[in-house]
Length: 251
Image 1 (spheres, rainbow, N blue to C red):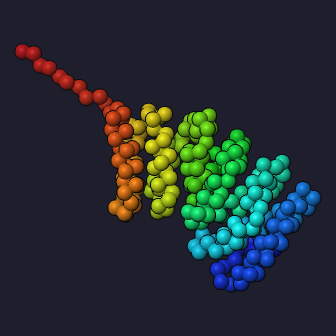
Image 2 (cartoon, rainbow, N blue to C red; image 1 turned 120 degrees about the vertical axis):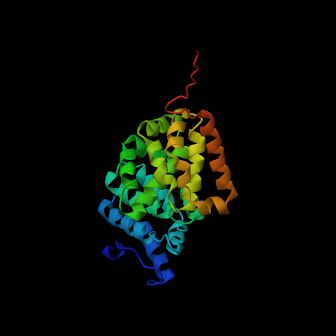
């Protein structure tokens, strides 16, 4: 299994072989309560197979294995902390795939519960560090996780994220070259501002919305509409740092 730790390059291993590997690794992983160390290796191997953000064929193989995604969430909700990283990496690699692959994870009934469980364990601080990572894949996974939390977490968790400075991450989230991530970020910003209007001035003064790629605005009307809605809101709420004054001179 160490051979799989570096991932499988597209086309170097027959699809049928990868399918058999996934089935075998999944079957062994299901015995994680008995074969803990073996399950740990199996999970990391499955994560390496799912590390396929360019073509996505291997992600589909992992997704199409019945019960595998359920198992990853089950393990994340278990007390076996040494297995959490491998299970989380499987889901993270799938999320960085195409729209349908991302949706398969985000739409899972346990998705937000598990993310919020990790948020309770101070994982948000780790996500913030991950956004600043030099590793492109880790950075993208962390950005997606944060945006998904902002659009799906409960009020208490969102308040925690805002208090932790999540608004200062929006320049990074808005300047990405990932169209889907930009669109989701604009959705999150539009949803948050009515509840946290005090941040409107920050967004206006820093000119955050100008960071959205011009090509996204030119080719997608929905993204343009989202940006316009946010601009209208901040223009109506933003307070100048130095209020304007009117002077009257009397002779």
